[in-house]
Each structure stands twice: as structure tokens, then as C-alpha cells.
Length: 87
Image (cartoon, rainbow, N blue to C red; front, side, top):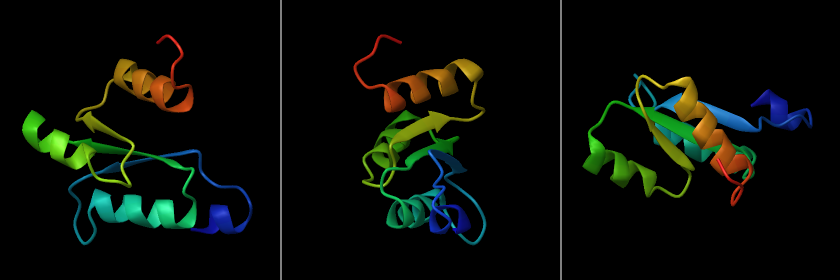
């Protein structure tokens, strides 16, 4: 992760949960290890009970259904970047 090493960390990372070779939870753990303040949003096509389970992971800040919508992204970013503010 070159950005944090150069003093320019990512504010938000969006990743898919299911990918070949590495999964979204592994990506989230690596991101948080490099920069704990970075927000991690995981995209998934899993049904609601499984989404809730993924959302309970400590390195994942938000779980979003695929395909993401602009409204869904806006809601997630609003809630995560400005907690307590009206959305």
C-alpha cells in the first residue's frame, strides 16, 4: 500500500467480498493494518442473513449489496464520514 507509506492514505476503500485469491475481509484487514482510520466498504451479492454476518467483522465498516447504487454509496459515505448528521 504505497499511498499510506507516502503520507497520503486512502479515506475510503470499496472492495468485493468474493474474489479469486483474496477475499474482501482479507483486503479489509490489510487496509486497517496499514491505516486504521480508512473506511472499508464491502460489496456482496449474499442474502441479508449472510450480509449481517459479514457486517459484524471488525475490519468492515459497511456492507453494501451488489450492484451498488449511487444512492447507496451516498448513504454509506454520509453515515460513515459524518456520523449523527441527517442523511
